[in-house]
Structure formats: C-alpha cells, structure tokens
Image (cartoon, rainbow, N blue to C red; front, side, top):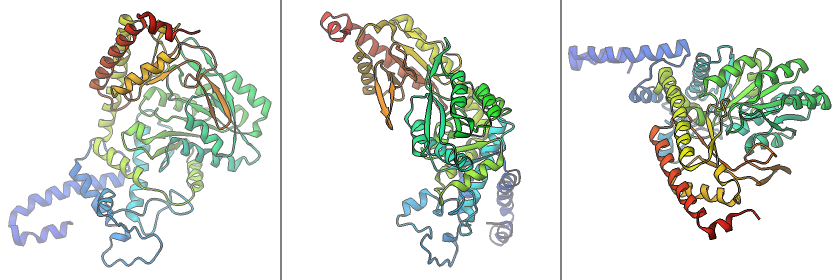
Length: 475
C-alpha cells in the first residue's frame, strides 16, 4: 500500500493507522535510499522487508500486470506454482538477445534486480579492497564458462591471436575453458619457491618472446588455489602484459573472501589487469550457477556483456541481491573476519595432529585459504594408502578435503598432466588439503579434526601389522 491508501484506512481504524503509516514510511525510506545510492546497505534488512520488496518488484514484470495478454513465444508462464513462488513470479530473466546487461521492456522488475545487484556488488568490492574497480556484472555462468566468455571477448579484438599463456593449476574447468573457446593453451610450469608453488614469470616472458605478443590472446593467471600452490605473481605478470601490450585475465574463483588477494589484484591493476572472474557461490554462500566478471575499465565489461548470446537466468542475480540485502556490508565483513580467524585455527589444529601422528603442515604463507598436510610419515608406502585415507574420511562425511597421491596422471583435452592435483611434474609426498572458506564454522573444523585423528590412528595400526605393511610397500 502507498501513503494515499494508508491514509484512507483512517476511516476504519481511526488514529491507530498513524503507527502503520510510520512503519510503511520507514520501509519506503530504506528502499529509496537503496535506489538512490545504488550501494550495498551497511546494515542488513529483515527477511520480511526483503520479501515485501521482492513481491513489489515482481509486479513490474509484464506477466504480473492486471489484464496482461501475452501472445509471444516467451511470456514468463509457470506450469507449477511451486516454481513461480520460488522465483517470486519473475520468469523473464535478465538481458536481451544481444546483451546480457540490457533492459527488457517486458521485465522492468527483473531488469531492476539485475542492474541493482551489479551496483551493490561493485560498491561492496570497492569497500573491501578494490577501490579502483570500475564495473562488474553478475552472469548466470559458473567460473569456467565465465572465463570462456572473457576469452572470446578478448579474442574478438585480437583475431590473429590464438594462444593463452596459463600457469598450471590442476583444476579442470579453468583449463577446459581455454580449449572450449577454440584457443590453444601454453602451459607454464610452477616453480617451488620454498614456501609454495608459483607460475614461473621468466617462462611466461620467454613464451611471449617465442610466440610473439600479437599471437597471444591473454595471460590467464590464478589467485585462489589449493595448497601448495600460491597466487601467481600478479604484479610481475601485469607488468609483462603492460610492456608487451597483452591482455591479462585473472582467475579469482574464490578469492573475494580474502582481502590480501584483493589488494594484490588492485596493485596489479596499476600495470594491467583487464578482467577477473569470481564465483558467486564460493564467495557469497548462494547456490552454484553464477559468477562476477569485474574490470578496472568499464568499456571492457560492456564488451563482455555484448558477447553473451541471448538472455540469461536472473537466479544468480536475485540470490545475490537477497543475500546482500539480508547481511549488509557489516555482516559480510563479519564473515570475512571469522573466516580469517578459523583459517588460523585450522592450521593450529592440523599442527597438533602432526605432532601426535607425524606428518607435516606445509608452510605456505602466500595461500590464505587452503592448508596442505603432507603425509611424510607414510612417504615410503604405496600411493594406495593415500587413496584409502581419502575414502575413509569421505565415509565419515568429511566433505571438501582433497587427497593428492603421487604418480597420478590425468589427460584433459589431449594434454597430459603428471601428478595431477599437485600442480607440478616433480615428485612429492602425498598430502591432504583442507580449506577454511567463508561460512565455515568452528564445529566443522572440530569434527574434521576428530575424524582425521580416527583415520590416522586406524591407518597407523594397520601399517604396524607386517602383512598390511608389505601390501602397501613400493616394490
């Protein structure tokens, strides 16, 4: 109800309607402030306030107009009321056939959420470590497909180029997006700097000189990764890209939750960072299906939007819109601080396990999200033992821990990767990685540590039995 409607209620409830008017006006002021400032609110809204706002926005879409008559091929019709309620009766999606960022004439409400959520994310990112950021868009694609979209956009401006220089990261989607874009990867080895693995900057420059800058679509570097890999040297890579006039794309899949990573991207942008991509689910605790594509140059984002073919689902934008309204900037910063504290706690608890059962927590100060626990106490045993540890943890519902065994080879798109999962061809001791990412609770870590102890105790007892020990020995 608007102010005029509320005033009309005085005929029925007399002076008591004044309190209701004050309540409604308070909510209206919140909405007007959001629309005027286009910023993520400092304090979160209540669920009731958000739901009322969403229902009002949905009334702006043509399928919810009184007397609406749709005779086109896409009219936001719902066969199931469950689906309709799940999407707040908004089914038109975002964008138009030629641009994912364009306004839909039939979907002013859905378009409003799409535009406003982009503004809110931009404001949040600028406030937590990326003050120079110019524009970002939420796209209904996961990280790999979003990077593909970026590669196709850059290639359209460099049609003679065909190569993507890529410091190795043993994660399939970030490699397959290069292949799926029709481009050729040039894989750069990681070097051991004593405190983690990092893409070799010298090899990147040598590859640029060998291929020729005009033949290179971009350098695709990585920030967030599984230990023992640390963020690539973005600042030096950015300098190379500036010197040789080569675009620079950064895979920052789950790095928004780490302010140190954002500060590195910000610093690298002073030389050259064309685009970086981050996942919505990994950084904002929403369902899988969306990414945020960001740039320090608004025109590049405009080009990415125009490269997207067709309309897109509004679900990732709506999910992020609701989440940011619900927790606000202060709530998100609290999540970041808690994650940071629990990362230290995770490392400390794993260190205690190494003192009790053997093994080693690798010292990797550059990785602020992932911890690697090397099974040095089982170094002489067959790699099957590491697979067994992983299976035992999974059977106890430990999710997300990765067991990396030496000797595994993986072929992805015709390219062979030795020691898959380790980011390197060099020999290593089998290890486990565990992460403390946004939303993790102390109970999660405590339960993991308890189960990890149980598994190590069981494995140690098995190894102490001669028959089992012989079965696992390397021949």
